[in-house]
Amino acid sequence: MTTKDLVIVYGLELRGKSFYARFRVPARYAAVERRREINQSLKTHDRREARRRLEKMREQFNFEWEGKLAVREGRTTPESFHAIAALLEAVSFSYSSSSELAKSPL
Image (cartoon, rainbow, N blue to C red; front, side, top):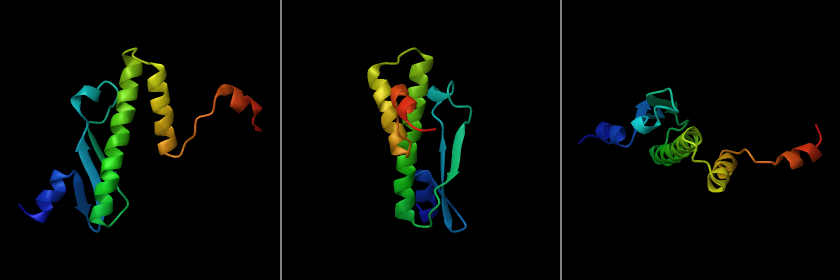
C-alpha cells in the first residue's frame, strides 16, 4: 500500500500542497442531504492536522444529519434540542432563548 492509498483510506485527498476531505454521504441521510459526496478543503498542509480536522468535520456532519433526520421523522426531544445547541457552540454559534434575545440591544 502506498502513501497515496493511505490518504484515500482516511478520506483525505492531497491536491497540490493542501488536504481536502472527500467522503460519501451515507445513504441513510439522503432525505436530509442533497449532496452524494462531501468534498471540502481542510485548509491545511499538515497531514496530522488534516486527519484531526477530517474527523471533526465528519462528527459535525453526522451530528447535523442526525438532527435533521430526527426533525423530519418527528423524533425531537429535549435531549436533541440540547445536542443541537451544543453543536452550534462547537462551531462558534451560541444559543440564546427568545427572552434573552428580547432583552439584548439591536
